Length: 333
Image 1 (cartoon, helix red, strand yellow):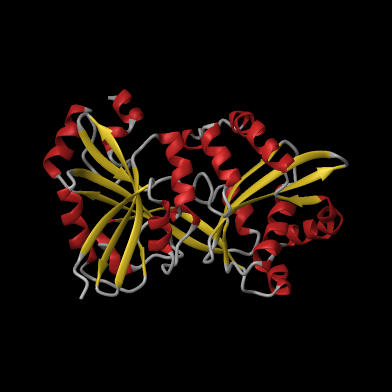
Image 2: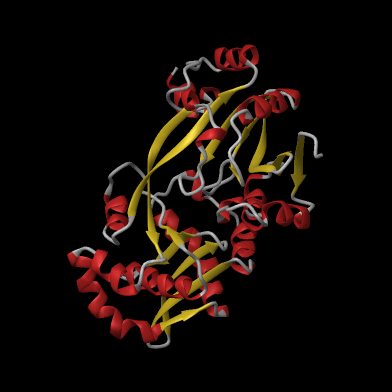
């Protein structure tokens, strides 16, 4: 009989990380490769939390962040959260006892709607952020085509001429991505979450569960897209393009490739804001709209309230969480 077990697997133990996730449906955001790459930007101590009770196993990547002598936790960049192999209705009690034993103040845990299990969360701590757009790659290609919007179908006609100019995983694609990532996002006046170091970007390009495709015009490479994948789903990560109308052919090409290797879903992500033009672009692929949620949890209320008071921040968890980390609120005060 296996006793209840809590385990924090560090990035220095990739084989154990892989072993725990092997039989649990999970996304690219759960993988050692993704979490290691993101740690090269954040510098946060990053772990795969693993819980086991008899046959039940639950996992979630977490990163520890220091603040004024205390530690709070967050899921690393990507779509991850608690995933497991069976229901377990007492999990939140077990998890919170563990989090308190580690001295964590609070936690912001992103949830992936593709793998979300209601028995792992307290519904009162769940907040909806935005929407994700997901394609079912188990559909036949003619069904995927039928689901496209009218404009996408027009683009698909041009794709027949473009597809011969699309290449996969060439060295030149990696070089284009690495050299143009920062200038591209600077031009877009991007959110700080996209401030990824070259070490992070290089690690992603070299990962076996990441692939890139790029489109050429003659001998000149014009745009590159990046995707991370597991046997359970793929995630559209980035497109670097200084030309218009090249994202669709790259994504459509990736759909064909992912289907060919048996990946059942493609998470296109969401918009910057709910219902914005980026969200509309992804919805026009005929994708399924799923709510993107998170958990906002306080493990030590006394310390949490003290940190917010010191920062002149609101202790409410309805908005930015934890509020004491919101520079805008602090500066406004």
